[in-house]
Image (tube, rainbow, N blue to C red; front, side, top):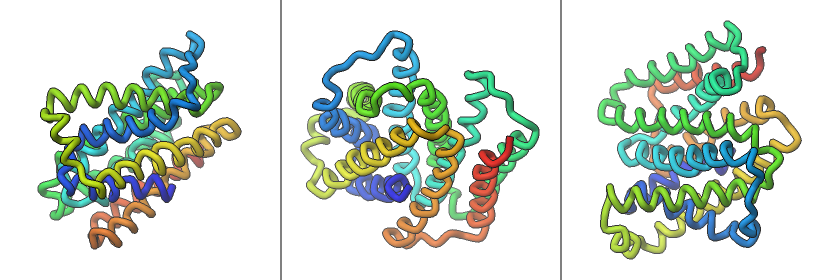
Length: 273
């Protein structure tokens, strides 16, 4: 969770160095793929896993990271983006109901409502006047992160290297194509990336995408998603602390109130039936 929390301020540092957001997401996934190729060995999973693996790879490798970078690119304040990522848990529960036909109790519906209410309170923070687009992208990031976690349940029998290599492959190729058509001058932009930015991108790929996610997938082999997912409530604390240390961000009163509501709601979502 420390690694997950650090991903946001580290990504913002790279974006502040004029690295295009979509290209940065592609390069991050490219490094992941490059490292995992020797472990992947180009293994093709059984047909019954293909659909879930493709959806997971696109959701996690493409949509989560591109919307994460776009949210940070369009925001001057990082902490609300970090907190907004917590909506992945209520989004994941709703997706489980729609895709896996899991029942959602009245208590869970209430907590889902309060989690969104907490985000709404944060929206009224005067400091966020110019950051609404970033918060919108953060909500999309959370939506696809929750969707990815639902499909990850169907991939627990696959090796973690195969899952992450597939995520890296889809993320690198698709995002590189999108960057080429939207951001343009792809080769020129890559050449302009300095050594500090390459270090920051490599950190995201190796420490966050590989180490942190491999550890999470390893835990999924022994514990249910319901036992592991609540720990995601910890990474905003580490992320907000790092944002304060690196950028000097001081949370406002509305942010603290909304943050307490959001984090409390998502923790309780996995404490009740």
